[in-house]
Amino acid sequence: MLEERIVFFITQFITFFGQTAFSISTSSFQLLCYDIFERRGEEMSTRKDVVQSVDRALTLLEYLADEPEGLGVTELSNRMDLPKSTIHRFLKTLLERQYIRQNPKTGQYQLGLRLLYLSGSLMDQLDVRKVALPYLEALGKETNEVIHLCVRDGDEAVYVEKVEGDNTIRMYSKVGNRVLMHCTAVGKVLLSELPEDEIAAIMARTGMPAKTKQTITDLKTLLTELAKVRSQGFAIDNVEHEEGIRCIGAPIRNYEGEIVAAFSISGPTFRMTEERVKTELSSIIKHYALLISNALGYVAAEVT
Image (tube, rainbow, N blue to C red; front, side, top):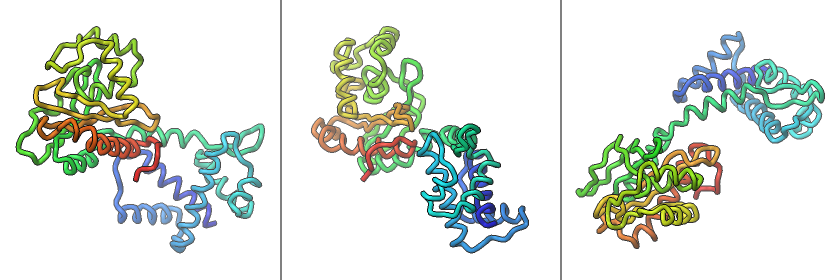
């Protein structure tokens, strides 16, 4: 039956992507489709029937995802407005492939553990640097300033990507540089949602040396600053790490809402004025923070 062939194709296709971190072109996708069907000695049906059956199989999985206790054949048939015989054919193939399971006590159908494996594979493929880079490049073009991407490594922040602006006056930072977190915008972001005792422990280990006259050098003031970072969604390095340089940073969140990286816009104070940072760049960086986080699976308000 067509439905069984299509569901078989879907499970093969999902498995293919669950086992590789590479993308696939449209032409390669078409070859994969034909290969899957030809190996079963069957011909492709019309494009309309294929698309409809794919849509139905995915809709079935989505219904099950919304019902942790599971659904029966009758309920699925009613919700999808399909004959029970059609629902049975979908369920049969999905069961065989372990994308769903049947509760032995209730007889209800639930999502299977195979999907958990695939979701874990997807999360492993979502490399923050790879996902963020196109957005960081766009941000660099929009602001014409230097963009840094950082992650926490122990008690410090490490630059893992840098995008240069077109301005002639540039920063001499480079990928791999390590910076203290109490005096940098990216560092404040990475600290902002840690427990206070963990922040205190980090500061005790690294100290809070004054890099400039503006550097925050006591824990109480830093904790007040981090509360402000949490409430406004961005952090500012107001000439606290390097003389003549002002930065604004924002968080990148993963699909669980955790801060996994931070990025910043940096430049000389005559371009990065306090007014520009607070009125123009704050809204821009928050917008890009949401875009990148959404690309990593973070669910938040709709991006416009």
